[in-house]
Amino acid sequence: MSRGPKVRWGILGAGGIARTVGADIAASPASTVGAVASRDAARATNLAVALGADRSYGSYEALVADPDVDVVYVATTHAQHRDAALLALRAGKPVLVEKPLGVNAREGREIQAEARASGLLCLEGMWLRLNPTALAVWAAVAGGQIGDIVAVRADVSHCFDYDPAHRLFDSALGGGALLDLGVYAAAFVLPLIGRPSNVRAAGTLAPTGVDASVALTWTSATGQVATLTCSSTTEGGSAATIIGTKGWIEVAGQLFRTEAFTVSTAAGSRTETRRLPQGNGYGHEVAEVERCLAAGEIDSRLMPLADSVAVLEVLDEARRQLGVRYQADEEN
Image (cartoon, rainbow, N blue to C red; front, side, top):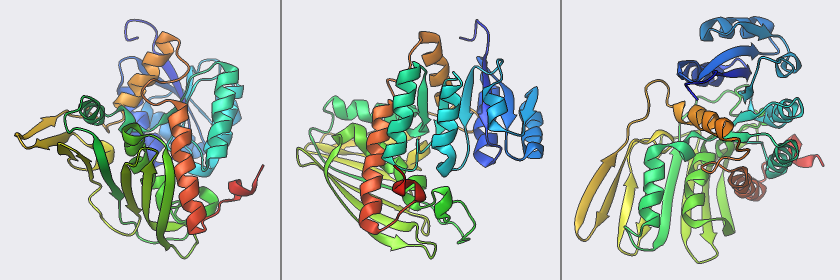
């Protein structure tokens, strides 16, 4: 797409992730940030200036109505993802929704149904699923390099200072370790062993009632077992290991932005490295949106909406067992 007109992005939200991903959008030769919107008009203006955007808006409705916006990136807090995505789709705009797609599977299915009915691209911004190292890991497993999968271990944890007003601890904003951190571990496991036939979860809650630390066992229909852990109160290393009948694979570094993995068998070990692009690491999801739009695809082959919904179903069940409820869970 770099030879044709640039994809003109509109960004809904003006927080940290909007600035981070927005910088990678602006850095793409095939894209440009055309507009930024926030409920706080001053914040929208400041981010628009930083990203080189021509326009800023004090409402989301104004941005999605902008005829010079080709695609919308939803960078709001979790609890706003569903409404913002539907707003963009109903205005005729393709959309990239920051992870998670919604706070529960029902919201995910609503977004999926609207995208299909509108015939518009909708993609969850799960950069792990577009990471070239993760793609190579899944390919190595599919190619039988470690035999048949027996078990998977995945952890994504990061210690945050407790603040009841912080989005991670605020139930009204879709807070909790599962939606913010565990979603990565679940997104990594799903392509390996498929949807679970059984989920068992245990954990601890923050004083605000959202999940703080969770251990989840995911059993596939064929008996493969994945153990997922996530925590907002510990530094767990954010690692992953895939155990097979003939060897194992260890994913190096932070799982959500890994750049290397090691395959070990009785014959020895080898390590493969694939560097993330320059910038903040989100260039691959920007490129996937560009590719899908150029190809006229309304669902990404690498990050299909069905997988986003499947992950939310797992997290829903884990939250149910932990007793964590959001307002959106009560809505029909």
